[in-house]
Image (cartoon, rainbow, N blue to C red; front, side, top):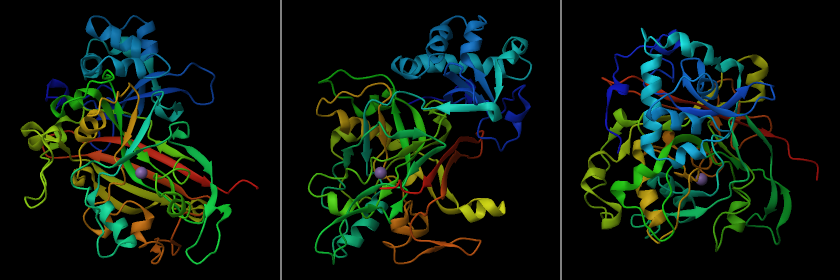
Length: 439
Ligand code: MN
């Protein structure tokens, strides 16, 4: 796990004034990475680092000869059109880039004049996926989500007996994962209501969100070489926000016996900024379970993991309906939770995924699963918030929603704050539902 160092000092201020207001997601203590270019341009995609409302154009800084020493190789890798190469280099590389930028961006730095020409306003930037996502696996790490969903199918026995022993997951599909701003057509699929004799093909009428975090893998493991729990986070490059859009009417008909398929792979959205595990170091929390629960098998447990394996990350989801957009009203928050409520940690996901020898590669994405908290107002999918579509949620402008309607935009946000640390955030993960294509 990353240790605290001088880059986390809450007293640090930047000569980029917008980084110092205490409300920005991107103070000098964060320094997340994305792949960007100027909006509407045909410039090459390249890596950037967020500071306040600006992007440090890492490629431009490399070109200008700004970097030297340990940070140079990392900066050259970060200047490529995807972050995969940087991710593959392991946490020390990203850490040396972070340290160099932290020093250069500090108020009073003698390097301000050299770096200033390499800033691009975020308002003028557009983003690509941060990396080439080779494989995508989605987990099911919230026991509250698993219980809420289980209750709808099996009221007497909501949680299956394997849940507290094995981190449940399935292999998803990466080709349809897009970056924030993604708009996708409502999927069609086979739907069979319980009272129908036969299924029919129609646009999903039960389109839903899943508020998750995405764990992006950094350095790989060799095929056949499991990653131990205490080494697991050295294979994690960082975290993003992740919306695993789901079609709840396609899902129940197709999922047995092999799991989710077309109900999940029509679109999934990630936020552009990758917050590194090092940036998250001030927000570690203990990771334990109730004493009367089975304790994890030894390969999923350690004292270091129990002491600080969790992360205190506030998460929320907002909706902007077409009517809100037309009225100029702000989006409405409809749920709020925290990543610390997860039953299985990112390190446990990595240790479990590789225990059979499976190899993870730089840029692989592990979804946490829907991160619902302990109470129903902390549920992170409409299927829970509306109890399977029975109780619509009320929005502040008088509208209601059971499932998503055409034109709805969903916005995920995440941030960390605690006394004695600078507040950092993840930016936004935004996606919009378009009408189904004509059949
Ligand atoms: Mn999911």
